Amino acid sequence: MFRYFLVKLLAVMMLSSASVQAQKTPELLLYCGITMVKPMTEIAHLFEQREKVKILIAQGGSEDLYQSAKKSGTGDWYLPGEPTYRDKHQKEGLLGDFVTVGYNQMALVVQKGNPKKVKPDLRELLRDDLTIILGNADSGSVGQESKKVLDAAGIYPKVVKASAFLSPDSRSLMNAMKKGDADLTLSWRATGLFADNIARLDVIDLDTRVARPQALLLIQLKSGKSPELARSFMTLSAGDIGQAIFRKHGFLDNKTPAIR
Image 1 (spheres, rainbow, N blue to C red):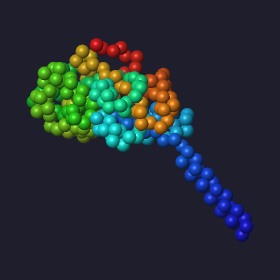
Image 2 (image 1 turned 60 degrees about the vertical axis):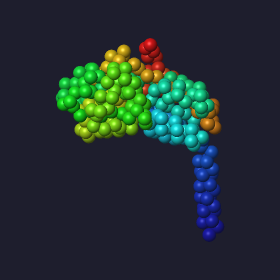
Image 3 (image 1 turned 120 degrees about the horizontal axis):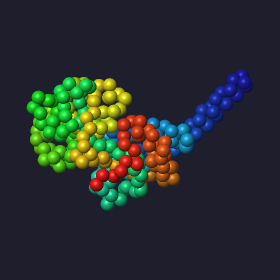
Image 4 (image 1 turned 135 degrees about the vertical axis):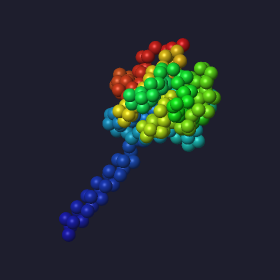
């Protein structure tokens, strides 16, 4: 009987110790644009093992994520799909230091093998024999950058009118393309090169003078409770290990020359 109670007591003590240990494990929160979730998840796992922390990743459209971070008053980093989000919200006081973790750029994405013979030209989005889909400029970086690129070409309103529907983010665009809902879209080129997309889709690169590479800024949030850990994670992401991971997922690394 005594042995039974001793074993039970030890079990309770071990569970209590594990619970206390779990409570001591720091949790950090990354607001991450949909397109960058794959490389950032891989980097986060490495950092968790190294620092014995837990990184939670909230994913979505870049503008929606910023508003969530602002409203909640919690979180450690914000990684939008393009640098204009930092410019837009910097004066509000939530965004702190940043590092560049890579570059992405817009490209045309078609069905595998390019059966409709789409050319590397934005005006292909106006072909009346193709079903076109586009990102929504009000919700995420893919839509905002699409608008910027197509405005510069003078065809944005026409492409919107010709589109079968607007999607909130790049993941929705890629899923619709893989289901065969469209023949052509304009999206971040890295999304077409992801392992789960490349077997079904092809990327048609555009001239960098038409689709300029956009810096991916990992921004430290002033709401974070562990600033030293946050900075260490940023160093890992922008360093050699993080950059190899970004390249593996189809992104340009942070040594890409800026195009003015």
